[in-house]
Length: 213
Image 1 (tube, helix red, strand yellow):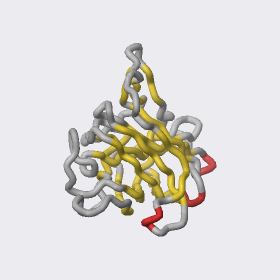
Image 2 (spheres, helix red, strand yellow; image 1 turned 45 degrees about the horizontal axis):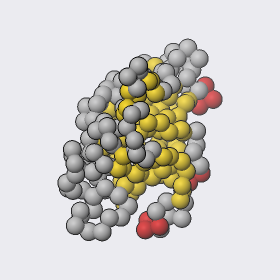
Image 3 (cartoon, one colour; image 1 turned 120 degrees about the vertical axis):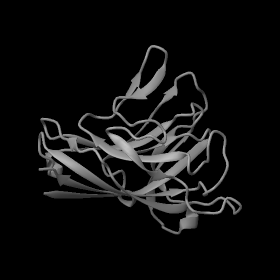
């Protein structure tokens, strides 16, 4: 059995919500922001996307979108699925540019996957914010979320900075099992090694879930 889910942010949030982790509460001026916004004018799309931005002052900022799936989405309790993603977003990070800590394009890693628990931010006694799922770190993927690519948009860094659309296709290597109530959370985000700002407009997230066994 295969379940095909398509999220087009021209229609609004489509059940996705944003989150930010892997930074310290003591850091100021991270510029964290998210929400449905008009797409950049230079793309000529006349539509909206799911905007998310942050400044990676922590050298490890994770910015993500998550969506809960339930039996209403044909998810079955205690059932294991393999996931294939097609992710489209607009990025203003050119290819081959030089940045502090890493490139603004190639060192900002796009990650995708799923979990049987809701991804939430955890705050420890030192004020460090982490996440309760295994996403790996920067260029390394984790059990729940793996590396799908990066945000480099293919434009020449010598040209004026403009947004361009990027499409990534990714098959998550680790199957995910829904919980006893048929809940499963999809996760798409960026894990940054670039010590500067990243601002993306997600346009579409398509997911195919294939029943294992």
